[in-house]
Image 1 (cartoon, protein in one colour):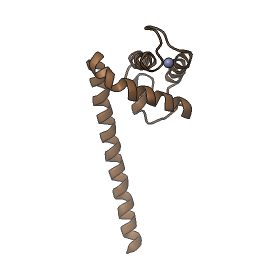
Image 2 (cartoon, rainbow, N blue to C red; image 1 turned 30 degrees about the vertical axis):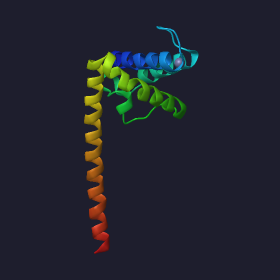
Image 3 (cartoon, rainbow, N blue to C red; image 1 turned 180 degrees about the horizontal axis):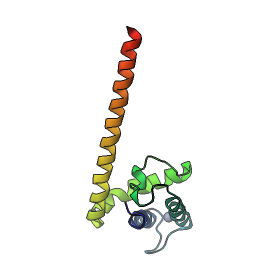
Image 4 (cartoon, rainbow, N blue to C red; image 1 turned 120 degrees about the vertical axis):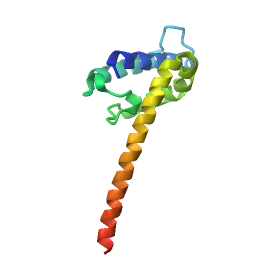
Length: 125
Ligand SMILES: [Zn+2]
C-alpha cells in the first residue's frame, strides 16, 4: 500500500468518525481526532515497511500505543462499513487486502498447530 494513499484513507476515516461521533464540522477535526490523525501520520512516517506496507489495520507490527490503537480501532469500526457506501473502491481494496492477510495468518497458525501437534506426538511416544 502506497504511503500517501494509506494515509489518505485513514484520515478520511478519522474525519468520518469525528463528524459522526463528535459532531465536528465538515473539513474539521476535534482536538482529540486531530491528535490521532497526527499520531497516525508520525507512525506511518517511521514505518519500516515504507510503501510496501499493508494497511495499518492489517499490519503485523502493531506499532501504535495502546490508547491510540483503541482509538483507531473505534474509528475503523465506525467508518469501515460507511466507507463501503461513500468510497466503494477504497473499501473493496481494503477488504480484499484484509481477507488476504487473514488467510495468510490462518495458514500460518495452522502450520504452527501442525508443528506443535507432531511435537506432542513425539513426546507421547
Ligand atoms: Zn473527533
